[in-house]
Amino acid sequence: MFRKKATLLAWAMVFLFSPWLASASHSQTLTMRDALARALAASPRLTAAERDVGIAAGQRIQAGALLNPEVSYEQDNSFGTGKFRGTKSAETTLQISQAFEWFGKREARIAAGAAGVQSAAIQRQAVRLEVLSETAIAFLNVLGGQRRIQILDEQVAAIDKLTPLLQRRVEAGASSPAETGRAEVASALVKADRERVRSTLASARRELAVLMGDTAPKFAAVSGRLDATGQPQAFKAIVAAIDANPQLVRWTAVYAQRNAQLLLARLKPYPDVTIAAGWRHFNETNDDAVRLTFSVPIPVFDQNQGNILSAQESLAKTRAEREAARNTLIVIAGRAYDSVQGSLRELTVLREVAIPKAEQASQAISDGYSQGRFSLLEVLDAQASLAQARLREQEALQNFHIAVATIEGLVGNPFSLARESSR
Image (cartoon, rainbow, N blue to C red; front, top):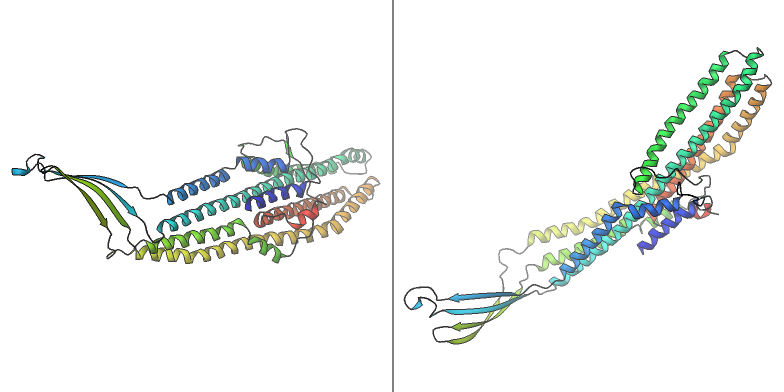
């Protein structure tokens, strides 16, 4: 069940970007599909979680093991004095004994072990979802960094495009030679911003590479687009879906395990029975006899009260731990949901007003500058405003898709807006 949900999340990440993911024509370009697959194959946390399942399986096998029988040999009345000198009067006994557990102790151990296996298996699915979500977010950070550099490159090109026109105006005496220096400063400042973004992008690329099992990036770029959005479902539906998150479902198995441990603690004071049967030989008369033993401990002093109390408190603690984990997930989902809503509102303002107006103003002022109606400062200001609007749009889109990936990692299912975005 949870393996299926984790698979759905992986496909959801692919569907989210499938309309615009370019098929990898060469190994240098990384797609979301490849990143997710490589991260799942290389994740040491997922490997550790799988080993935890194996550990729990071994403990479950051991919990069902029966108690081993015991063989004992006794020799009495030998190596003494008088008639007991040597072994002439010795009595030798060869005996086998077996302890038997009663009152369902073995069954309680088996139940605790089985619940441990289930808990470890569910935790593995939780780790799988986390790896998918973290890889998707890292991929989006790289994709967003690439887009920011592209926007800054366009701004530098737009400023540098003014240089020939500016030179002609200076030669004609229509502009001051100082304006050439002003344009160079503006271009240098944008290039400085671009270098800062490149540093951030390098860190994002390295993080993505590490998630995929590499110490350094082995891809030239990632392919994808961020410009598709959609409306999210109601937050109540997201909260309801969070209850199916493996991190919460796991507590059902933990509760069963701790309940079995409490039962085992309560059963421990009940005595086990040890039955033994043996053969005794009397050297003095050369006779043989059968020896039977039946023993039961008397639980007078130790009735396991401390362990019973500890198991009771551990069981009672389970529900509080689950609620604490649920509250944490709801807070994370709430932040991501608010980020989705805020990004959508921001994109509406940017796309409907800021970017169109900035494009119109930049084009009009650039055309007017060539006719001598505007100054270089006004041209640079218009170009900077357009670039800032586009950078804000890119940031809002990146925040939107990161929030979607976060929510999908919590609910373990494709987000409804992901399906809408894929259309």
